[in-house]
Length: 205
Image 1 (cartoon, rainbow, N blue to C red):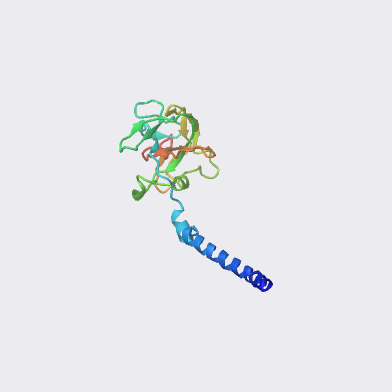
Image 2: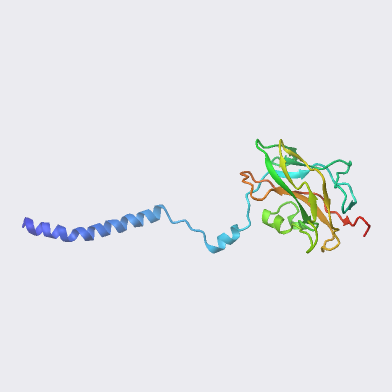
């Protein structure tokens, strides 16, 4: 009798183990449903960046008109400066970070950003509107283009255009600033730019 009961339990053991395992797995799935990102949701996330209250700005408007081969100055005839500001409270407040920031000066199409993006754009959109020199020409903007910002300010030395702006559709450029590519910057800082302007050939267009 005892031997028969042992044989019965031995035969039931695999079945009981399987039933228990299935019940445990089912309970775990109910408590901890699997997390997944569908293709559509990943597409919605593409191009979305964490908003930031930090932004680069040029401290003054540029002196116009601007000619090729001439140093770019501010409206008071001085070298231009890039500053870091904090817009977290709806106001523009100069600020600084506790470490130096590597920045780069670039040229943008004067039509960027479009009206609907006037106050918001992604780094990808910004980078796609950088204007390079025409084929066979010198670099469009020359001079001190790679700088280090300390204490929230970066003075820009001599920079000048080598070509006029008549060959792009908008016929206007902007001088802009971004974090230097390849820089390991933990804090997102929004790019800054000047107003759009025409660059004329030094001989007169």
